[in-house]
Image 1 (tube, rainbow, N blue to C red):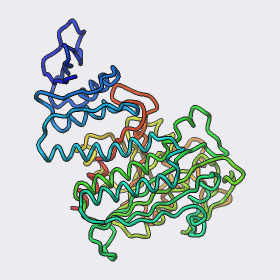
Image 2 (image 1 turned 90 degrees about the horizontal axis):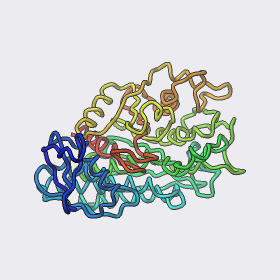
Image 3 (image 1 turned 135 degrees about the vertical axis):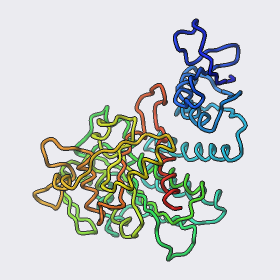
Image 4 (image 1 turned 90 degrees about the vertical axis):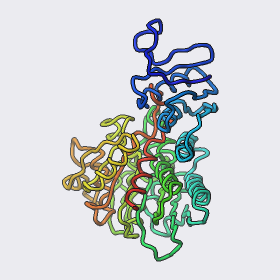
Length: 431
């Protein structure tokens, strides 16, 4: 079916302010402005819902952003359709291809079941994808990595990942990836990225109800998002050294699983009492943040589908941003505005660090006040593993990575939102 953009309103027979009309083998998208990409995405979602298999975008107005909006709206987890895009200038064509390649990696890996994307599989898929992107776009092997898994995690003192993952038959894993285009082993590290990769979250002994558990194969959304973002930045010409740490595990119930009241002693000396086994994401991220901090990067970003509190605050519509570094937050929001992706700032202040107290350890893994700000106290927990937590550290509670049900813009499943923004932030700050 041919799809045309029009600035003419639809005939009244189609209803008031109709977005889509049809004639023979053509669908017409009626826009009030040719830059109204949101309406383009809505129209694409409608066409996808109607079972259109091979849309062909023709006529005027199909800019890069409108093509990308159509792709995002038309995409679905089960849709095997092929969009025929119009002829774009070469730079726009290349940009669109990169967005699709990196965005699709994020969407597909989040949507896959946990029987396929185990912790080790997630680490390996991420490493392979970034390696291949570097080879394709930079024509040299700039990537090295190691995957630490199973008993090696305990032996190398990655206690958070080890304790969360030890209850599963699928070994936990930590990916340590080094993108170093200079190929100088002594080159300074520009940025470190730390992702939560919980490939299935039962809640552990603080077990989730079935309805909440049904989508918990997606609890590795932060790891997937950072992988796609780093790949996008590399494909777009990133020239600075970046290290990626993915903290991957399954949170399961078994005779080996961590229990409430367990105390984890981290390699930086901080002790944490497990007060809720369903607050496991922060336990694994702590190991990644300690390792990232050792690299002395210019800045650290971590991404995680960390709290229900963030989702209550912003829904599936925004990624939540928490940081004390106003300049870094400002740079992120500037990148988000350029990329037309939704981020929203939530509070993180010094007093939140006193709201995770424990009677038996330095900190507890959940808030200790009767009515606490869950996303903020989760960030406070993480701050104990970044030495200079008030500067050059950004925590993203990425609620917008996945939608349990479809809406007028998105199909059910992973969205890929945030890939462009984080890639743009890396590129902008590296200049």
